[in-house]
Image 1 (cartoon, each protein chain N blue to C red):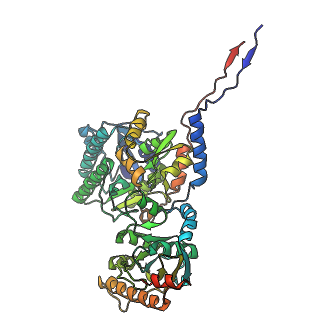
Image 2: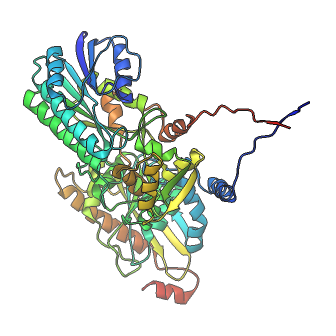
Image 3: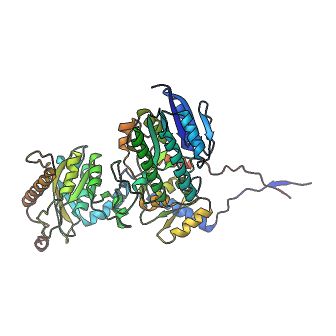
Amino acid sequence: MPGRRVLVSGMGGELGSLVASLLESEPWVGSLVGIDADPPRRRLRRAVFHRIDPSDRERIVDVVTSFDPHVVIHLAVWEPDARVGTTPARRYTSECTAAVLGAAAECPSLESIVVRSGIEVYGRRRHSLTRPDESAPVDPTSEFGKMLADLERVAVSVGARVGVPVGTLRLAPVLGPHVPSPLGRLLRQPVVPFSVLADPPFVVIRESDAAAAVIAAAQRRVDEPINVVAPGAVTALQAILRGRRVPLPLVGPEWSIARRMSHLLGAPVPDHVMEVVHRGRLADGSHAAEVLGVVAASTTPEVIDRLYAWETVVRVPRPIAVVA
Amino acid sequence: MTNVIDLPRRAAATAATAAATAATVTLRTLVHRNSVDDWGRDQHLVNVLSPLLGMRWHVSVGGIDHLPARAGALLVTNERHLSYSALYVSWALGRASGRAVRFVGRPDNAPFGPLLRRIGALLDDPIEVRGALRHGELVVVATRAVSHLRHAGPVDPELVGAAVAAGVGVHPVASMSTMFGRAARAEVGPAVMPRRQRRGPLAEIELAEATQRHLQKMLDGLGGLQTGVAPIDWLGEG
């Protein structure tokens, strides 16, 4: 199936840029168009990029329908406190999802849709499964989880209406030195709070592994939800110690103060990150290997190590001279 | 004539920073940085707690060769009130087999829920148990608690159904301990075979009943408690 037209929404983000650069070297991709509010973070040679505000639905619809894609990869998801706050993140994600998927439904050549979701959709309510697989019920307990659950619902309904497969990739928190992530930012602070009574384990995924899963899902016309997580797990305390940060044990009420302090220091802690710290976040990613044929190259501890391998600030020492 | 003197730059280390650094270094030696598995079990913590568990229970294990080498299996053990048989059976079988053995029955409240998860506990949820069994894990579940030492209570058919759905064997594990001494036993039996193949929910109901019967036979075969102290044996019999 060479010569496919592929549309990537959210091409300006770290994950979108990486997906676009990988798609450029795929033999089955004929032409590639991207949409985002921000320009791509990588140099792209074949892709045509349109910088459009998420609220400009008319222009998004115009670009998508005139391109008439075979495959739509919808990555335009704003994680709260990653690049914008929770309220604008919810609005941008909702507006962009409605515009892109709505326009995709009008395209006669459309063959499949791939959307970026997250394992936050399973929620961390009391007695929720420790390690949910794709058959576990969607029951989000955080704002980001609810946003992703809404996105999945819209994508599945669009797919059902126009009769195309919809692959939903439920990614673990995507971490990397250059990925804007509230969890990554929190872990890279010099002093990192953790829940001393719980310290539950969580999983993450490296951005390159997530991008490889997106490419495989687009190529294989996946029509089901799939968890994409790195093998292994770490607890917050283990991550802090791996990064040689100072752990700050907290019990309960002082968390509200710690959150405010962290926000003031430039690392806001949204509710889905609080869930990770208090209740953990694991998921069963074994189905991805069967369906997508890709296995995460980096384990969760390796992704955490890579997060810390990047210097926070590169200081250039200045010689101090005193005239006697 | 002037002389230029280069002063050495010195990091300003306050007492608080030094204390925090010392605490971090101590933590690094106590907390293993890569010991949590996909289900949240921390082998390092299990190793640290093993001597404490050994102070409470001295478990003699038998029938370990009945356990599958790599595949998953549901291990059903009898439970007397407050005996925590699932905990010591999973710990003892883990030590004897060299595999991570999990057990069912953790609360989902801090601090006990997270602590038990770190030593291998799962929620009392058939879907959670099925997931673990599908990934080749050994999972210990307890029967309904009874008051007598050598009576096997009813087995939850929903948890047995998890093993049926995952396509793994169900093994009875006769366990015996007393509240007054360390001596304990855990005897693994062969996988229970259903008398007839069922397609519907009768499969797990009949298999649960068969497991209870096998468990009771094994308990009858074990005989009474023998700690060497007659009053303890008499009290232990309930």
